[in-house]
Length: 91
Image (cartoon, one colour):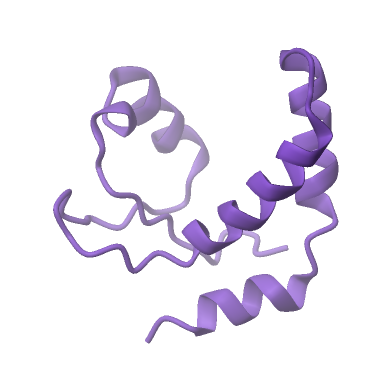
């Protein structure tokens, strides 16, 4: 949907700064915003994860494969306008 015209903001939690995570970001993300680890949470993705998590908990996947299938399905049906509204809610 966005092509290469987007940036990733993350909170620099230790799990996001592992070698494996850094390599994935380097190879798959157009740009990662340098963000301090103790900053206030101004990331609209957190609100989106609440919606996805609520949908997932109702599904009760029984294993990792089911979880992955459900996540792909739930993620793909999120209305584009919802994503745009969440993104534009942060000034």
